[in-house]
Image (tube, rainbow, N blue to C red; front, side, top):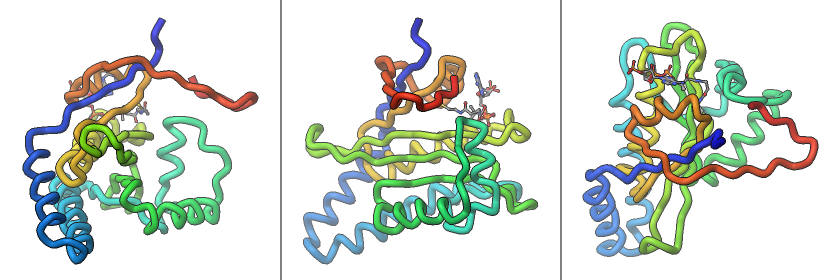
Length: 209
Ligand SMILES: CC(C)(COP(=O)(O)OP(=O)(O)OC[C@H]1O[C@@H](n2cnc3c(N)ncnc32)[C@H](O)[C@@H]1OP(=O)(O)O)[C@@H](O)C(=O)NCCC(=O)NCCS
């Protein structure tokens, strides 16, 4: 029996206009525009995040000092996190940002009153040669703290990651893997089953089923 499914979503129609305007900037302005281009993209990402914020919750990118706000507790509700010290967390963060900031986009949800992280989801961008050197977004590690579930925060988190991938970063598709019991949740977000997930774990590596 298939236990895991892979989902794929074609990017929204807004993508083509975002992509073409970004491409035009590159073509028209040559070398100077790489700085301008990343500025445009950063602003677009910020606009997408801001559009989800309200008085109770902030949607923003992960920060180096988020260890103390409970990020590992949220991730621990998804799978085994292991014994990650603050030092190890910061070392991993510094490997990702700012050097790999175009590849990793980790969005967190903060409870404004408690200044505590209650949700997290990652978008990993893959650059391809095919699809006219297209970009593909991969959503990973989505979790909402158990006491905050059922408030549509998960829906808003997926919409945020999907919009960053498609509208800001020009992905032609967004994919993710999930357990069968979460299929309906992702279908509610417009994703469709596409293919089957395969996984290989190193010998002795624990799996959370
Ligand atoms: C899956 C998860 C992120 C959903 O977060 P959430 O904030 O509770 O989801 P929402 O409130 O936005 O739910 C949106 C809709 O999806 C439904 N839904 C949520 N989780 C669901 C699930 N596991 N199965 C089926 N439907 C689900 C909700 O009932 C709601 O439907 P409605 O609009 O008809 O009321 C959360 O349950 C979670 O963190 N689970 C543990 C970690 C995990 O499994 N992550 C996913 C890894 S692929």
